[in-house]
Amino acid sequence: MAAKYDTIGVNYADIRKPDPRIAAIIARALGDARRVLNVGAGTGSYEPLNRAVVAVEPSQTMIDKRRPDAAPAIRASAESLPFDDSSFDAAMALLTIHHWRDKAAGLREMRRVTRGRIVRLTYDPAMRPWLTDYLPELAALDEGQMPAMAEYARWLGDVRIEAVPVPHDCSDGFLYAYWRRPAAYLDARIRSGSSSFWALGDAAKPGLERLARDLESGEWARRYADIVARDEYDAGYRLVIAG
Image (tube, rainbow, N blue to C red):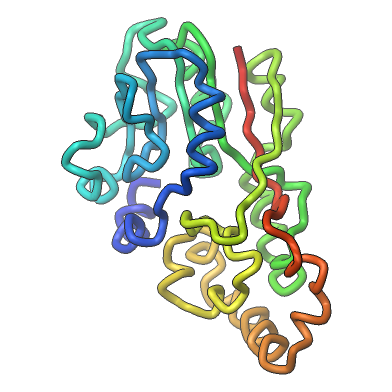
């Protein structure tokens, strides 16, 4: 994973700017925790500024792109957290578990070092956003790398799962963020902020070419007219809260 994000991280901070509406959802989920661990922290998106945060990130490129005033970051992996038991009031891990080599071990480590709530932003691989109509490879990729929602209860015990709708003008360029701005997927720079497009490589070309044709002809707008009328969209992102 570190090597992957040493490459992806080149444009990451510019493309993956935290959206304040999603940030508010995460902040509420953290409750009143004061000392928070952020696992797979990347450039620091969604780290609360009014709490004592410690970040863990395996990619040095991502660490180097953190703001000067960001929380201190330690280069380490989720599967081997360098902290004593119950060191943190809460822990968070956002859109990162699909990169972990051993997901169960990473979650056990988060539980070990956290005495309170664990908050995860993840993706439900059973969902099929409209982009998968053009790129069914994305659905296969999601199924292969994202845990099913039922797995979190098996690993963490009792959990609460909440949908996280994506605003139509979401500032964070994660995979399905551009659901109402489909032309963005034709921009290689935008795609460079998504590990899924890096994983697909040239396999994405036929689907993107079909999307380009449908946008030019107006077929996309006709097919997804109900989506265009929405202000937010359930693309499959989920908040999993344990503890």
